[in-house]
Length: 304
Image 1 (tube, helix red, strand yellow):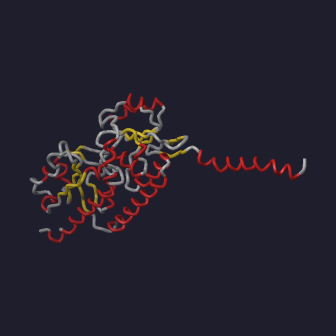
Image 2 (cartoon, one colour):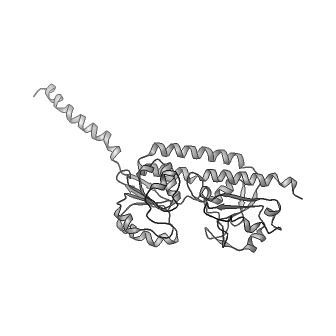
């Protein structure tokens, strides 16, 4: 057989090998690390996603995979398209059988006391899950990029991450040298729940030049007494009210005239959904915190 004939036969084989080589990366497994430090590995991008927290639902949409969500939980109301997604439970109870029957290829979860026990059968079912609990504002863009990898939506996830980082950089630069404002953040009024420095809300307060007066307490969401707040005498009191609240949580403080925050009229009601949900909208909640603390600073010169 001539050399020319051998070369002719070899061309298709070489072409096939090159095709396999260049196609290989698109078939590679996807692997990321979640907020518990667990490695999540998928053979291919997830197409049937269930979100088990409202903040997760917002992250999934922001990462460009809203149309891949097949289930979520109550209070997943943002963006508007999230309201039409079937519910598989709420913050107290999950419909485990329904979740398994829906055959998701990925769960994105937020774990609290009530969910810990309920997630066990889901673990045993073999459904992969990604645990999401950002503790700092800068964790949000990192989470968006990881979810983009898992969903195969890297481009929109990158755009959302870049936009968040830009806004965070602007806030950090603007407020990094501002005078400190001692701040009390109230999650709930009866009993009085607050958050410690491990929470993302406390990180927002820090970025704005504030100091969380209960930041050093051990529980993530400690209960504090009225007397403890009075003793700490914060310059600012913030509440993150829910849209369903009939009476604002700030009302109980207005009658305590010896509090510095009351004397200076530094009682602020913020959008709890923006600030308490660790999703992209928290940057708007952080801006509201910064504006509140700046108002308090502006009143220092007029203090009696």
